[in-house]
Amino acid sequence: MDVLRFHTAWVDANSYHLDIEDAQIPQMVDQNEAFRGGGMDGEIDVPLGQEKPTASFMLTTLAAAVMRRAGLVPGQRSPITFRGHTVSEYSDDEKEVIAAVTGRVNAQPEPWKAGAKSGVKYPITGISYYKLTIGGELIWERDILNMIRRVGDADQMATARRSLGF
Image (cartoon, rainbow, N blue to C red; front, side):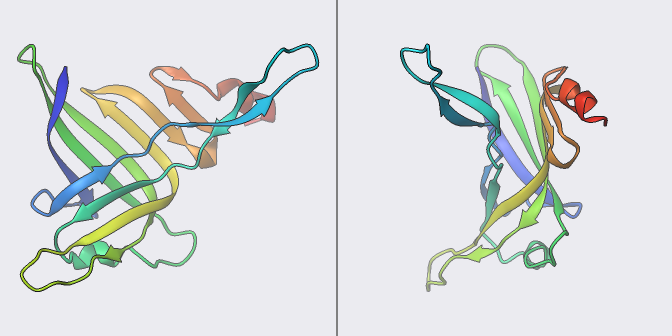
């Protein structure tokens, strides 16, 4: 059992390991539609692609360099890299976790209160690229604009791209 012990976010080549409170990397979730054929006794979900990926992170400071990534004109996306370190509870195995995301950064400052910490939540929307590796092993890679979806070593969309001529 590998337990995530440490994590950080990198934005514009700056680490926020002292400021990051939490991070949510994108999920891989099927976008399903119910189907019931004439000879079926019930319906099943048919996957028709993947749901729109989102991610987020929370910093406990007003990081101006990150805040400037919000509100960019359409078409501009920012690369964000989440890095983590896992340690096995059963062996001396340690691994790095890297989640690279390209998307649009949004800024949601928390209320300011005297004597209490406040920070900024950064939802990442419009994600066009996502790659997750654990211990150097590719888990997922998704390049939406180029119709690439890799799960491990298997390119799930290779045949579809060939059928479409690219």
